[in-house]
Image 1: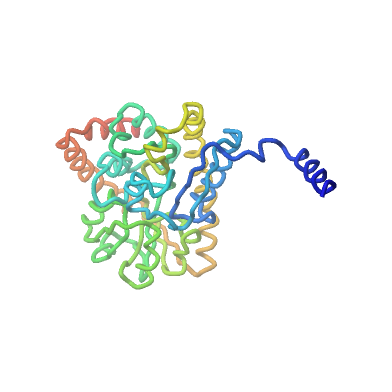
Image 2: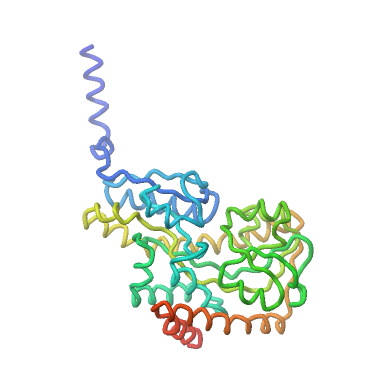
Length: 333
């Protein structure tokens, strides 16, 4: 027994002291994505980074693949304490979070996602309403590469081809789709596969990477390159009560990594684009480009829709037109 005790003591002495200490702050993280998706990969790296930079004082246990939250109601679920930290997507909410949900559509025509993210982050700094609407503390933002049309039954080559189609869409694309006779349907990406599979949807507006990461190549046959620019939005956040319970030095680590998480998410999404297209080709998806004049005509449908959105925000007492003006001015620079 004495020998065993001495052996155990010797082994303990070889282990770094920090590894034997329990974390001061055990937190849960919930995401609708898995670690095979670019968002999940970025999250896994971020979790490791936070734990390392807090010297193990923070421990984060992840729950992947909608184990705790959905995309559509992520903000509400986080605010209710379903998890301490979670992936959120206010752009998919049926209502509420008006600035966060509607402003991303004002970035129509942008082709550089890094510029989108830069402009958006400046807006977040200048207009506290973005954070106040959510009631949670944001620690990461998403911005994506341009999306196109993924379709079940036939390609889109002219705008007449949109008529009668039911397309899963972010809310900011619904107006332009309606202009040409299509119905835009908002739903989380994670719920889109079965709707395509069953024929509830005719298509989805998504990037190349979704052909692989969300397995859309299994349920669509065509990929029509009709561009849809993507604005930025809050994508990871901490429950406010939990956030307020953290000491300032821990908060500082989370805030110092907000830009890193946002940039890393974009970087991994861009890397996934080529892999997604290659996978789509392997699965037999047919790709077609859309004539420049058709693309230009389609783009004109976004301006009046976004002016109406800005006016709606103004009527709520929010700076819709002011923000729209700044976004369009930055586009022209």
